[in-house]
Image (cartoon, rainbow, N blue to C red; front, top):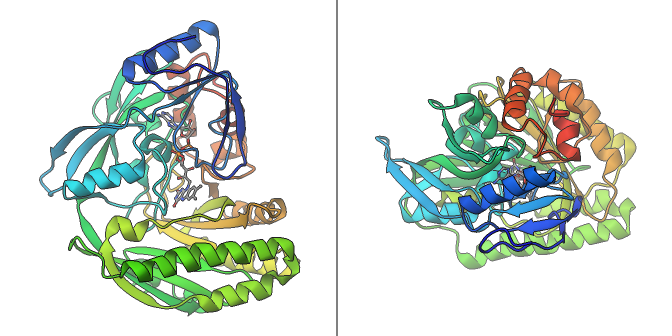
Length: 450
Ligand SMILES: Cc1cc2nc3c(=O)[nH]c(=O)nc-3n(C[C@H](O)[C@H](O)[C@H](O)COP(=O)(O)OP(=O)(O)OC[C@H]3O[C@@H](n4cnc5c(N)ncnc54)[C@H](O)[C@@H]3O)c2cc1C
């Protein structure tokens, strides 16, 4: 059935990037404009079919999966408005399907940048904000904190504009809403003047990192954007301490060197060590020790996006827990102890990041200074035991799982972790009373609509 220009209606099997979720959608549509989205939502409501939206498909959980209508907003990816702000930044409105890579390029052309970013740029703007995608930096929030306004199609087919001054509750819920309150068709973001990052990467002993995190001179406070990678079974960590400096528009890292370090070593060689680990799991501690010895200090300066974002070509599974910052060293120590006791073969590094507390209802950093502990496993190796063990450790400190990454919590436990959970559910029930935007994953983590 054709319901609008540019839309294809065909059953479609969809898989996410990490191959942890599959869906057989009855209909797969790529709306050309907002009117097409409205038609799709009304069609789904009329026929009693459920509807989900896919962005870049980079969530690890089956949030996108549906056997009903699956919408891709790849065609809603234009820059709609740029309003300069007194600080030299701008309020920038873009189609919600725009990929972060395109957003970053569009901002750079205008002398602008996102204040903070995660470590890849394949996500769509809507997908990234909807799951609480974050970067790192104790003074900076996740992407949803940079959302100033949203245009949403709710289940009744209405197009609503919401921000801090109009329809505030819808804005609160939709800026990090797991696609459960409506289809985001446009997002207004706060952009800042373009800046460079001076990247300083140091190889440091794990114990020294953990001892040196806190305090006025600690890694967390003295670094604008702190990112730590630690290879299990080793005592060595790579501390990436990125400092914000004025824009120069160019990188001091020669392209050839960048290729060797970021492609050949961080991806090519890393792919080999992971394949080796899958074939001979008992060799993992030795393999990791070689990998950790390849870590090296380096320093360079480049436009912020080039430093924040790295290629990630080795496929993996991931779980990430947001924990109170003061619990960070304890959690990492417990993970280390469990790994050494169990000998679980894990060739992927553990990643540590931090963000500022924020007020977004479902943000993993809601109301508390937050540290993130992310655990990864190569996609051809068993992840369940490792992730369950880390989840149990995080539970002890009231850890909140990343909404787009693997975890085992259900709505009841999550409700206890988020003070505004019931407010979110109330807005969702008003925006989508019949559960048009639900699937098994939203039922698991948010509960039924009523
Ligand atoms: C290699 C890799 C690296 C990553 N790095 C980071 C990182 O550094 N920091 C971090 O926090 N996370 C990271 N993630 C997780 C990722 O950012 C999130 O899972 C994000 O949601 C993916 O965006 P997406 O566009 O692919 O969304 P999808 O996975 O396609 O969708 C995510 C959710 O958004 C909803 N959605 C999508 N579009 C819309 C719309 N228009 N309206 C309403 N709802 C919508 C979907 O229905 C779904 O619920 C990473 C993931 C991978 C695979």
